[in-house]
Structures are given as structure tokens and as C-alpha cells.
Length: 171
Image 1 (tube, rainbow, N blue to C red):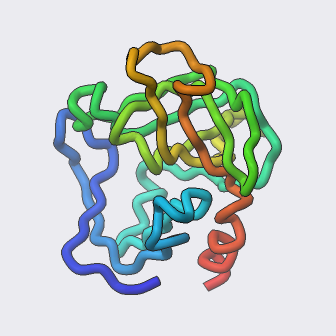
Image 2: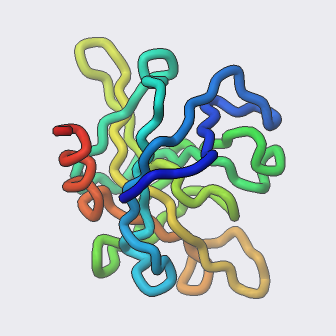
């Protein structure tokens, strides 16, 4: 946890431009050693503006959902990372130790930290529920788009960070 200097969050970036911004005033990180603690490669940001009222929010839930998911992020293969992309209809296909999982959501370099979420309809309103985040990928030498033991994307289940999320909400 701690303060941040000169970090700005830009929602809804399209072609590198956003109509709004908020300053990051506090960061909670799972780890400073991402390579040694990949299962804790997450962060929460406190902003100086409540942008969720304007752009929407999603709840973070500890659900064991594995199908009909989506990944949203700023992957370098979509508009050079200057426009958000999404893969709708992906799945978690293997659960690993320490709350990690392999998934087939398409997201290349730059999409790390992107939400992996499910959408449901509650009382006639569509609601997103974050069940994890994208953290890394492993691509074999052939750069093929087939997922196997050498070509996969890694995610972190929300159970790894939901306690911190709840503590932040209680503040």
C-alpha cells in the first residue's frame, strides 16, 4: 500500500485518447515480486474521482465459474494497446495451484491486469461479475493460436485478492 506520484487513470481509451481522467492516490499491491509470486500479481487503485458513476462498475466475486467468460484489456495487438479489446465467450480450462488458472481468452502482451468476467441478468439489468484477472501468457516458438501445454494464458482467481477488496470497501 502507499501513495503514488503522477499516475493518471484514463477510462474508455480509444486510439490513445480519453474524455476523462482521475489521479491515482493510493495503490494496494499483492506483491512487489511478480515473477516469484505470480498468484499475487494484482493491484487495486484508489482514484480521486468516482468514475464508476459515469462509466459503470463490476462487482468482484469469488465464484467457481469457468465458462462463458470475457476478457477486457489493452492488448498490444488491438490498436497497439491504445484501444480496449475484448474476447467474449472464453473459458477457464485448467485450474492450477495457488488460485491460478489457464484460460483461452485471447489477450496478448499489454492485457495483463485485464478483468476476466461473467455477465448475468439480474432484475432485467445486465451485471458484470469479475471472477479473475489476466496475468501472463506463455507462447511456444511457433506462435500458434492453439492452446496446449506450451501455449496458454494465465489468470488469477478473485479468491486471491477478494479479501483486500472487501477491506478497501469497508474503509
